[in-house]
Amino acid sequence: MIGILDSGIGGVTVLREIFKQGINAKFIYYSDSKHNPYGDKSSDEVYSIVKTIVDYLLDKGCVAIVIACNTASAICVKRLREEYPDTLFIAIEPAYKMVHDYNPNGKTLVMATEGTINSEKFLTLFNKYDNKNTTLLPCKGLAELIEEGNEVKIDRYLDDNLSKYKDIDNVVLGCTHYPLIKKNIRKVLGNVKFFDGSLGVSKELVRQLELRGITFDNKSFSVEFIDTSSNVSKENRFMELMSSSYE
Image 1 (cartoon, rainbow, N blue to C red):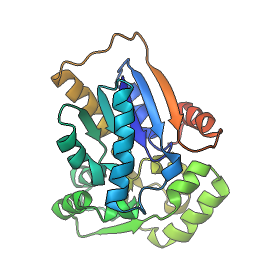
Image 2: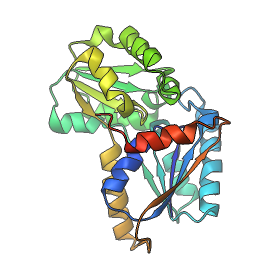
Image 3: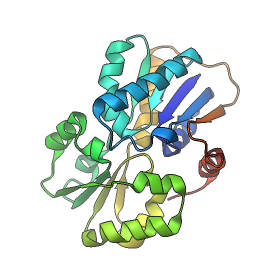
Image 4: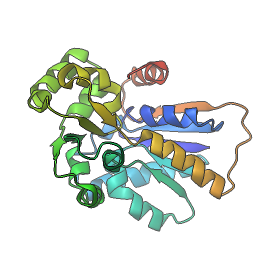
């Protein structure tokens, strides 16, 4: 069994890429909407929340845990690997290096939570690959709007916050919620190049499972969805996003 955790349903973008890799396992998707967003919480608070989820997933029998949340990844993964040395953790990372690899000279906008942008992990990556033509934009409140699914509010937010960046070439989507609104972002910025970490995470999961000799007997995958909020519509929205196109 493989656990996927996120501060909400945004990690569905990661899970979709994992499915494309052909991993026929049972999955538990843990959507912590009760504590969303993680990006405006202290590091200690985020770690305490994530550790509780990890303990739950391990008790359920997960042999690997994918941290499908950039903020949780940036703040927690190093400490988790130290505290749980026998557990396989695969953590998403902001895809800023992909800009360096594929369009290094392009004018770049990094959209992420404040927690991700201010994290040591991201700043180390950014300073290593900084193309001197990049703007870091903390998108406070955007993940919550995406969780809500109100297109009018999302479009208004993006118009208010992105209109000044219409000369951008690259957009790094530094939160797993953000790939769900690529179409909305294009309404404001035009045909920009998007970069996010979902594909890299899925391939790293496959690589690490093979290295450790971890296999699954399931002939097909299944997903158990858990959400910590009292919103009964979350699972319906999650399943809808699983099968929809957001390119």
